[in-house]
Amino acid sequence: MNNNDFDYGMLWSIYCAETPDFITRLSETPPLQRLKRVGMNCGCEYVALHSGDMCRRYTRYEHSVGVGLIVWNFTHDIKQAVAGLFHDISTPAFAHVIDFLNGDHLTQESTESRTAEMIDNSPEIQTILRELNLTTEDVCDYHLYPIADNSSPQLSADRLEYTFGNFIQYDVCGIDEIARFYKALSAGTNEHGQPEIIFTAPEIAEEFAICSMKNSYVYISDSDRFTMQFLALTLKFAISGGTLKKQDLYTTEERVIRKLKRNRITDNIWYTYTKIKGVQSTKRPIEDKICVKVDAKRRYLDPYVRDMGRVTQCSETYRAEVEKFLSVSFDRWLSEKN
Image (tube, rainbow, N blue to C red; front, side, top):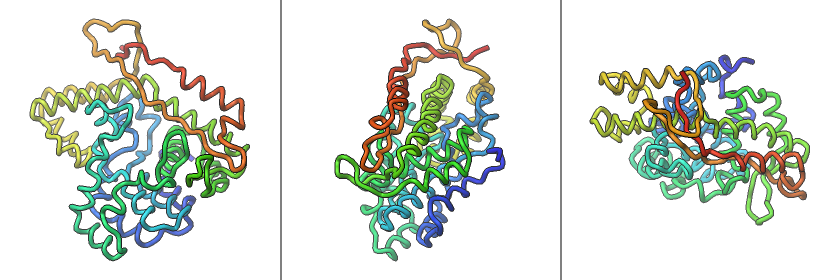
């Protein structure tokens, strides 16, 4: 199936046979509906360099519902599932580009600061939470629940969902392979005695991990780092010049783009951004070009296999892949290729 035709909602039926009513109702509230207009790929899908590879937009809404369903499937705990559903509720337009703007792109935590505020300020959400006997405090921090989130490179619902979603986005593997991977997972206990989503079959765990590494190289690619930094600089310029307000970033990408286009200078910069067709690296900055040197958060997965340990402990092949990945250097200047 071409990813242009793919409905990411198809993944939901893999994650959970039936969507519980509380997830359906909460996903229909305005704060969750806003996420339909915030992409998972941090603005990269607007660039000519990437747009052909990202025919079908993958949104924070699809991801968030997916995380909620995965948590529910493995815990059947409403509190944890709602926390998973809400984990990206405060994600701004262009998502982690704003971490670049805030100087936090290596930890990617700055965009989570408004989660409790957004939950508190939604009367629709508060009504449903009261019916579920939940409070904002119960569901505003998914880091409290290891199945929903845990320390990298462990496997959590959040990492699992965007890994599967990007398997489709980057054409790594298809829906049947994803279903096979998912069937080999269960809720278990890791080597630290903590709950974790774990694999029950080492050979499937290795295959999944090797596939996930293809995603990891996309996340740290020169093209992604350059285009995200370029967009962060664009937004910073627009905010400093009064074209945008920081609050605009917590609306939708369409609204932010419309505001950029109302100003002649930022309209030209946005147009230049969308027309980027290639990225080059050099040892030194090139005169009269926008050049950036950008480090990257090295995101990879090392799932736990029941009774055997991490995939890197079970597979020499994958251990070597991880070592190679972690050794990648970003000591170079990036600029648009003519």
